Length: 267
Image (cartoon, rainbow, N blue to C red; front, side):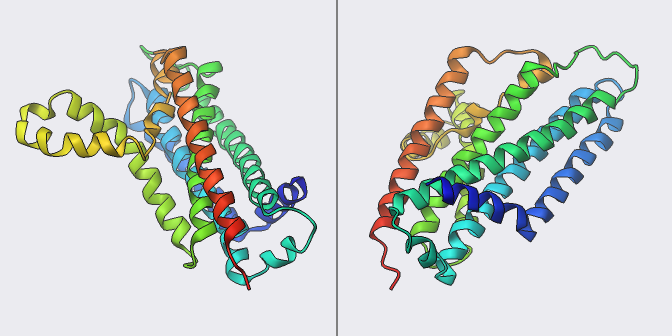
């Protein structure tokens, strides 16, 4: 398994698409720096909010394109047969690739996190805003949450890659999954608050959303940016439940991916 993990690292670093996304991530951090100038009273808070949003966008793109490059494209070109010619199980290939992608995502999260940390540290100069941002454990906890978020997207995209015969389907469905999972929490909260008094809307869509909750993870539970931005600790229980949800869903996706890949005929 670990040989596939290490080869994923080497291939991931050589990918041109990944280099382009890395440049995009750096540009998004630059946008965070520029956005701070539009809020003279809370420059660090605005820079942090925009920067974390840019990080989430970049990490999800990293996850999708790494799955496509390291699994989807190898299946498409049949080069996966060279890897499977070794006396190892197909499960080792799938899990090795996934853990390799997790390592690459971790490195990308640390790099972008450091750039954002330096950006927030420098914006605003000596100006003391009313709400002080926390760039210690709260900040890195929020970055960790974004990494888990991207890892969850990668597990779903990996499952799609093991069963798809369309090259870009893992990227397309993975992007839709990331958007839907992130939006689910806001939709649930809107319906639970009464849908602004729209009884018909609530009656029509609430049963549907309740059903979707069983098949789609609420990835907003991994967004802990309010902690570094406003010193609002989400609570150990909330963070723990978010982690359990992510681990359980990723485990299900990996089980499906291993099962699908093990039964797939490449002849």
